Length: 391
Image (cartoon, rainbow, N blue to C red; front, side, top):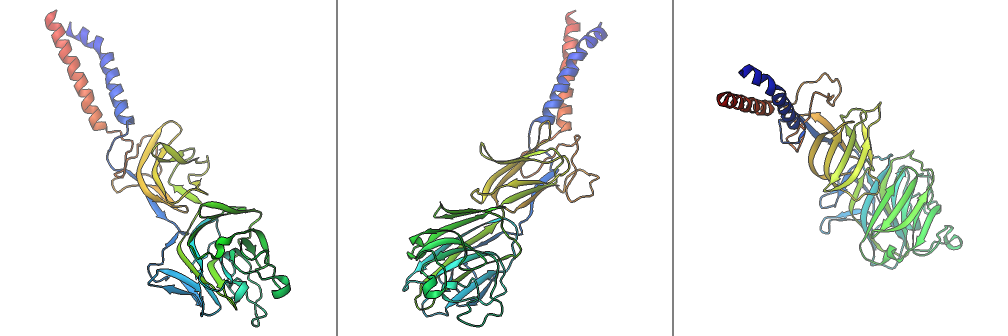
């Protein structure tokens, strides 16, 4: 008789056990450490508040580091008439740059320029040339060219008639290319010399330049961008008239966040609270994902969710700082299972649910599920015995 009842309850017992195994396999819990997301680096990233000696910059002519004020002085009354600083890093990819400036306190000239994609092999010119090019009327110029781009903050009207130059107005912000007189776009703006600190953000996309001053869009230009040269820096000039030109809190970072160690057709979401900041899917032929972050306020904060074609398979810890240009890899942790991958990143399989000490992850936790299954079987046996006794 008891064999008969055991046969009758066996399907129910097996179904309940299978449900418990499935739940334990799929519910995110803090499990054994197998996988982790790791920042591999950021070749573009610079974040310099000039609180320390600017070892990452090359300072020329009048430019100097003010250790007490913790800022860069490009030019000032009584200094040499041109000052230039070059970042000791070439950048030819897309990027976003941020900095603060203050100009004023003098008799009113000439301005400064933030230079990028710039050939730096030239003698910086004084006055209205802002250190952007060599100035032939000042001295002999072995190289009177210096291709590249500049974001110009010009505070003096160097007219064609008086100076042989082509300034569009006395106070203007402009994007210039290759020559100090070649203005791609400009806007009249008194903030170029009001002796107040201003915040600047320049977004350099594939074929677009966008300028923000004090968080308001100020300039926008679209067109083909020449990235032959990689010089990044600031220049300033004074002559008969002058001003103090200060730079502080410089940042530069990329516009792309790269995720490695994935498989084809996996989706990655970067989430802050209930907001999806970035999302993307790997292609069928590439396990590396490039997330476009152009225009987002940096640094980002959030955690990553990684999904295969069927379900969520990994959820990272919260990263407090994610910058454009970061490369982040999904890797095996020291406690991870073995794989046959020959690349730097682990190859995940459907038999593996990655977990991490850094955050919530998927875990099969087979031992716990097995215990739960044995409990179900034990209850079934107890029920069987009680049923037999009543019969």
